Length: 578
Ligand code: PEP
Ligand code: MG
Image (tube, rainbow, N blue to C red; front, side):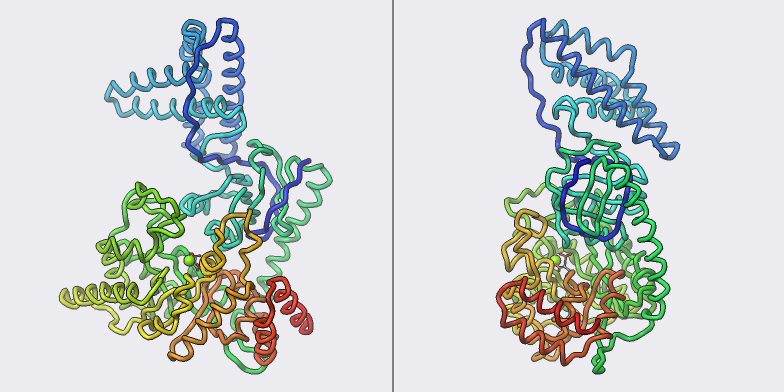
């Protein structure tokens, strides 16, 4: 039994076999001569790597559909090929070079031969050879520890990986995995946000995870306490399995109580009304948002429509998607954020652009202002969708007023185009910005003169104001929304919006945490947007506290300097309501 600690990023418990996902480029293949008496040892390594690869493929075949099983079965046959394997052996003993060089040579020969036929079927087999023996090569290169990137993720498994890109995470949604354990990442990484939305338990920041687990190992993922246990003792398995069951019983019981809360308004005991909306990434999440009682969508992350594609979605496809979101929300307001691509969310058009500091680089509005054609296409699709519901749009990562002016002028061009083409759209569609860069918070008064609303993105605002990568567990101690600097920036933004007479909302993860919401209400915030599953917990908080109390506690919090003290103060004040 081996236990590792991390951080709970999406609550829940899962018990099951591990699927180890390694998506790194294979190390370059070394070439060196060997003595005749070393060849036997190289052959043994090859044999062991073959065996491990067969075991992994066998594991992947469990419960797979027929088409996938056929591919894997063919790969198993390749790994026992009565011609290829002996050829590798005789080449090794004849050429006396290391086994990796021999294997690569043989893979290249076999695949070149198949491809030279020009036959589509045989060329496909070449891909299978590369895939199957690529797995063997990975084991050789990495001392048998890693498994190469999977084509399929077996349902019923807990995925263990270093990290996942949002595009990879998207592919997991319907895979049937029961949990996610990552070496990197934090509570506001996009994969954590998605895992919470899809209710997949996740533990992140588990250092040393991949050194400890192999495919098929039994794992307990305790995403309540943020712990993973590899090869747990039998009594731990049964204890966690019963917790897993009572968790799902609790969830269904909670959905009963939730029904009553869902229709109740979010009003404090002294009558102050809050608006709670949902954050979603895909149009088919609107049903859940409505069922959880969200009064609209406060953040639709449009870049997810662009991820995992080889080309950019065209105007028509985007228009249909945005329209689906509006229709799915049945008349409730929807805020769509324009493309926030770049950094961890690289889209097809950005892949060849390598940056030293992607988080500080060519992302979000910066990308859109340069790729005007891409931006204009999205704006046209959004304007067209605005004819079908209460749509607002907002620009991500605005750093200063000139940037906002430029974005607005491109929007105006798109409006004029549509007008000329006599295509209907809502002329009065509200246009806001995300305040997620400290410069925007500091100059929120200037930006508020041109924006119809401000939406505070604390996930990035914390990252940029504290100079701490939101996915790096090593410096996660600084990534805390209760840092006084962050609270001051939030407070300045709320005040600037109030003075300009425009709405201020928050769509960062902080808005979905009831303890933080208590403080934010006290700072003057009235609009909150969060993962659908958090609407009810936040509403419960709003309905049990008074605004007077929230104001008082916020004033005291602003006078403190340590995040820990602020959290303690809030928790203690909330205890009085229990
Ligand atoms: C944020 O930064 O707070 C935000 C909501 O945007 P994202 O998490 O997508 O960066
Ligand atoms: Mg952001």
